[in-house]
Image 1 (cartoon, one colour):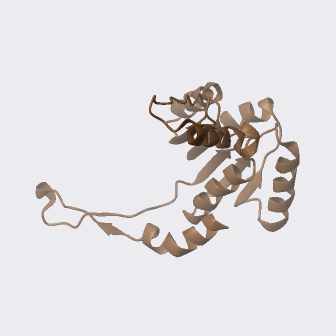
Image 2: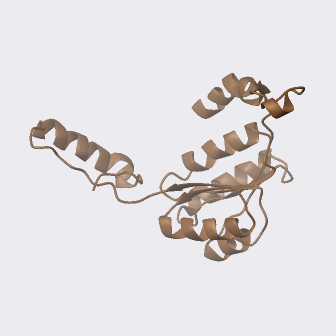
Length: 181
């Protein structure tokens, strides 16, 4: 809901045409930047935040005027099935659709042409997504997980530091991609 409210408050300014400096060689003209949709976008979301990391990029993609194919993680089947059921109930498939399934569905989707791909997940799968997107020069946003080492300085308040590390490690059952190691 926060993301929807944010978009509703800012969408006019995001979509507004912006004047930019005109190069001297084109002195008789006007230069501007006008945001426009990419087109058909693919959003591949992870298992650890299956609702948040599916809906946040979806809201932004729709607000920007794109159509969307959502591919939620096979490792969160209850959430994926719920998203598919609700989205298919309330949105026309020509604007927004959900593809559920696992690796074979992911592979088949990545063989298709998209105008933009947003992927959240592991670095190893991110490489595959980037490779397939690069073959078609498709722009990509990759939000990749990894290791998050914690370094404790010698002069740190150990009690406070331990509580903060533990909080970060236990948040969402230790599943955030930035959970401290």
